[in-house]
Length: 285
Length: 354
Image (cartoon, rainbow over all chains, first blue to last red; front, side, top):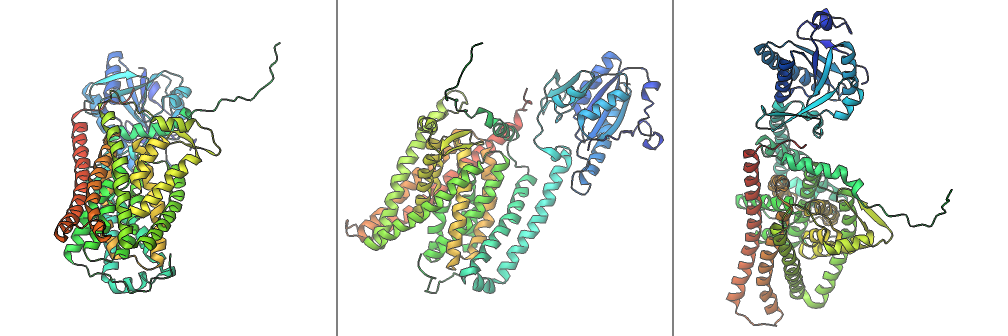
């Protein structure tokens, strides 16, 4: 996890460049703004903000997509999704940059955000400051970065209106944050898989009604049969119904859910700690 | 409990009407349970009996559908950060003891006063608990609604009890409170006893958690699902041991109720704290009316009153319809608020915190 492997993959093909060999600073003397994201899709307001600043200051942009969970145990599914999302996002960013003739370079890396930023800053000597995307802890980056770090907040609907702040949003969704476009598809897929499993379970019980009723009502240790079936049902049907509503777009309120999770996290600190009333010796020096 | 059930139980044949009825009642019951932590079960037992299911099978199947529903609801609400598992499990264990005590009391009454006396006792407890607790919750919900600001205030009884340092003290992180176990036990026992009597322990469990223990209504209703799971699993194992669970009925009810419980749990993320109290109190008060209408029948059987057969029959029927109405009203309020809040959230962009 700790080791970063960095490669530039758009302006030059990754094969041409050996690891750690970054020709960018030598070729381009203008200072850089490093824009960092750990999500596959960089938020558009973050791109726009970086472009605005780069245009005003006549800087170049270095966009870094950092895969923080390269070894996530899902058979490489996340890494693949990340790479696909990154390509999509970098294309959009490049188009935006070209429209305003701002030079943009893209790089991808894996490992811890703080270390990756530090690494990039040392490679790209001309980085003036860092802009971080949602889901990155300001503390983590600023503790390692040799240059100032900023994050961008914006309203969900009016993504264009941005303001600069040093605040970042806490990451609650983990892996699922990365691909917003595929999440609905995933729900639909889950809906079908678990729907089929549920249908299978129902079919198995109801086509063999007589046999099932004979054994399930025998009592004694046979009591475990209905309980086991019901547990299995709560798993498959529970997942089916959950993804069914999600696929229809009916999900819990995002704002409330975050608020609740925060309460849970903050709770221990706010429980009153008993005052220690035991007598003790005091020495006045 | 006595030995294995000796009489041959009659398991009904399934018709389209039975399946559709159980699916719909399951869905609505699940919706209410997911939202207020319990409820819905009270319509299912009489509902199944009206379809010709024998009493013991109806009670056992109802119990068996309750715990997977509570499990799925609890998992969903845990994802929203609303469930205090420790609180739910500790309460659940004592509630299970309460269930056994409740069964013993009921058996004692059954032996002493016969079936009519036992039914009268159940209805009397029903009306008493529902009116007192329901009225209190409703008053509180109205007060909260008209209060300015979103601040959640710990009820005075809970505040006082939390200050008493009596070993062993328990800290609950999600519920954000610290209280002696000795105050949890009576609430849990009462929850179990009510569950054994009227099949809905949550009508004491949730208000108990809110007003005596001091949890918010969101956390209380979510943790009640854990209590219901523990109680339901224990009860199911006992009923299934005597072979009284009809798995087909359970699966049909669950087919609908798991859809409902997910939706009910989603609903809690959109509403304010008082809405859960409001829905709960509304259902409790309407159900109280329903059970009140059932009392004359038992009084007649005990020869305390002598109302005509016709009137008693109408009252008994009305009682069942009023109970269904209670569930429908609850489900209506939940769905209305869920979709209203959703459309509002979509219309107004939510700024990121900071």
